[in-house]
Structures are given as structure tokens and as C-alpha cells.
Image 1 (cartoon, rainbow over the protein chains, first blue to last red):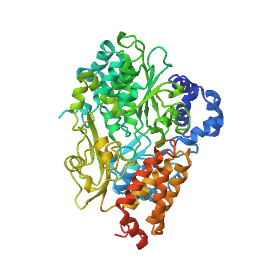
Image 2: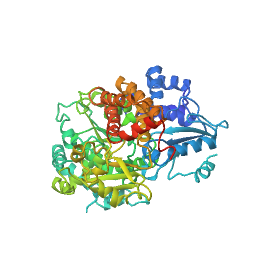
Image 3: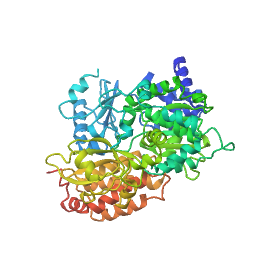
Image 4: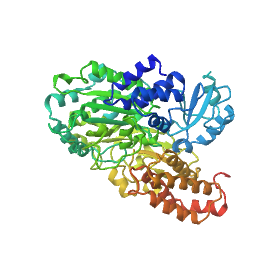
Length: 154
Length: 426
């Protein structure tokens, strides 16, 4: 249920901790990086590999918002909706993004290209409003520059 | 004016690598401490420096360390955790320190770990700080190669393993005991205190959790002494502070200034005052979970004691500015929705109370509020106050709510009277 590469990577992460379960979050991310999300069979595989109950691991997986228990698009957009960005009109930005992509927050575009998610403060408040697409931070967003940014993600 | 924390930081350029960092005096404090200071002397220097924890609570760092059991009978292994989970809305100071000078953090972590005789340390970093993650990984590897980490550091007999833990997300991870659960691979629910982490933390072993900025101060205290450190400040609380400002100011940003710099100086001189066409209505002095202050408070000195006397908290020291063209009710709604969403669900007053608060505020902002909702919100703020929950999330949520009901009461009443948001239609 886990590939050999996944097992190897999880073992490497587990070496940092005295208890195997501590690698649970690392393990879920390792699976997610390879598969895009964390399906049920991966929960079963990781729980067996880390010797922890599957129900507890699922509780962990569903607690952390950057672990996806449902499939997401090829690119995940995190739009900051916390207070500093709100003061810089992030609600309009989110509406505009929603309009361009044709999805509400929490949804994935029909072509599977983008998943649009709201996010806690991204810690770049001096450059608000901001968002992340995959691992990239985009700052000082306005109505003009969104389309150009989205074009970069196929 | 000395700015030790940001001396190596060159905006827009890559941070110093280990060779350049050492050329600028880096890792000298580790050499000094491990070769000529007992662990208790390092703790003593930090105590004398009067370094208040920079994560927001302002607990004395040296005192925190001195609660760790020392000597042969202490439980082992002991742990140091660096809280690099900067998620308090409006805060972006730790990002600056980690992206700007990662080795300063590593050096501080080694010193803090040595002071409490930790066997292992974790840097708990939020996933979103991708740039910092890469830089820290590289810096840790460099420190291992140079013998500042690993077995028998610099031949001193002291050994330390340092690992980077990347978070899976959630505001709760920044809470001290929630963070311990997260590292252990559990849900980040809070733990009951006592026992405090210094006695029973990670896997039940003695553990200290310190914020990034707190840790970054340690090398400078070890190098230059407690007296020098206290002299950096304009008040009794030692050191400099990374202050910041966001919102409709002319030049949002973060600056290292003497501890105790006034709000006026931060907002007018460093942030450049308000943008044209905007007036200052109020502010949160240090993140989402601090009480509102008003323009009448601009001469308050930004240290933990002075801001508390003024009725709020220094928190993270990154100021969030409310302007006259943004709705105060809308801002409080944004804050409370955030807290309601991020509540971990462990304590009933928190998850239940915050949902109710968010619901009432949504109604008021939409023009469907009733006058009695204001009294209800005040009662709920009291229910969220300290003493009713395991951690500080709910009390933090109560602070901007209760203070907004005091300072912006007319605005709440106007929404209810006029059955609309006056800012929405403006």
C-alpha cells in the first residue's frame, strides 16, 4: 500500500524522533507529495508502517489543513483571508479569483487545474493582499495582476 | 542605534552563508559559551538581560530556562523547541529573521539548548515559509559540517541534534503545548498545565519552547553581556524589538528598534503615517489576539509592561492599523471568524462560544442585528476570558472583541439602528 520509495522517505523522517508515530505528519506529506492527496489506502498503509491506529492517524490527517483527504487540483491556491489582507480588500480579491476560476472556496475547477482555498495569515502582511500558489508566494495583489499570475500555472 | 538582530540582513539579497556569518563574528558566542561558560552561567546572563519572550506572552526567557531540571538526576533526553510557526494574523517578524539570517537562529538555538542541557532540538516551522525552510535546512547542514551541531560540539563533550519539523498547518500549532502534540504526531490540542513543559514536555521529558526572535537574541547576550543588552532598550525590558506595521500606512514593513519605542514613532516615522485619504481609527498593537488601542494611545511605549498598562498586550509587536474607511464591525467579524475556524474543538467555551460570536457579528454586519446582541457579545467575551479553557486561543479572541465593543460601540449600534453596514454602501 506504500511504495518502497515512500517507505524509505518515511523512515528517514522518522529518524529525527524517538517515537515512530511522531513521523505521522511527515509521512502524510510524503504520500501527498507523490499522490497529490491522502487516500484511504494511504492512511491504512501509513498507520501500519508507523504502528499507530488508522483512526488516530485519520484524526491527525483531518486536523491539519495542509493535509488533503480529498483530491485537489494540479495547483493549490491559498488566498489569505486574515485581518491585514482583509484591510487591503482581500475579500474582493477572493471574489475575483472565484469569478475567474468559476469555483467557490474549497472547490476544484472542472479541468482539475486549480483548487481554491482560503488561508490563515501567510505572514507577509506588509505586502498585502497575498496568496500562495503551490510553493510560491504572490504579494501586493490587485485586480490587474491576477490573470497574469494564474497563466503561469498550467 | 545598535540593531544586532538585523545587522546581517541585507534586503533583497541572499542571507550570509556560514563562512560570511562567521567572518562577521558568527558562532563566536557558541565557542565562548561551550569553552568558558557553565550552562547555568548562560541562563544567568539571559536572566540578567531581562529578555521577555518575543512570541507574544512576554514570559521572562531566563526564568523559563531556570525551571528546567538540571544535573545528573534530571530526566533525559531534554528538548528545546524553537517556535517558528508564525501564524498570529498580522505578524511577519520571524519570517524576516529566518529569511534574512538563518545562522543567527541556529546559533541561538545551540546556546539555548546548551543552557538547559538539551539533547535534541526541533525548529517547528510553518509549511508556508518555503524560503525559510530551504535556508534553514542549508544552515543546519552547514552547522553540522563545521562541528557546531552533532556529537561532542567543538570538543566540549556537549552533544546536540537539531532537526527541522515542517508543520501540517493550523494556528493551534503555535500554542506551546499544542506544538508539543503536533511534534509527537498527534492533533494539536492543548495540554493541561501544570505540569509545565519544562518539567514534562515532549514525550514527557523536560522541554523549553522559545520563539524565533527570543532565540535570535541569545548570541548577542552571550557575546556582549546583560548590561549591554539592557542598554539597548528605552525601558526596563531588555533589548531591541522587531516592530512592524500593516494596513493603510504609507510604508508597511518591519523594523528593529529599541524596546519601548512609542507607537507614534513606529507608525509616523517608520511606517510613514497613514496613506493619503485615510485616517487612523484604531489599532491592534501585536497581532489578532490583542486588545484594540486608539489614536489616544499613540504615546504608549511598546514594551510588555507599558502596553499592558494601556489595556492591551504587546503580543508580537506587529501593529495592525484600522483606518476610517474600513468598518470596525467588519474587522472584528474577520478576526472572530478566524478564531472560530481555528479553534481546535477541545474546550466548549472556545468552539461553541466563538461560533456564536461569529454568527452574531455576521448578523450585525449584514444589518440584521438586535440591540440586545451587544450585551450578549459582552457576556460571550467574558465567557472566553482566561480560566475557562486549556489554552490562550479563546482569551486571545476575547481581547479584540471586548475592546471593540468599548471603543467602537457607536459603530455597532449604528449598524443595528440603520439595519446596514454604513461602510458597505459608502
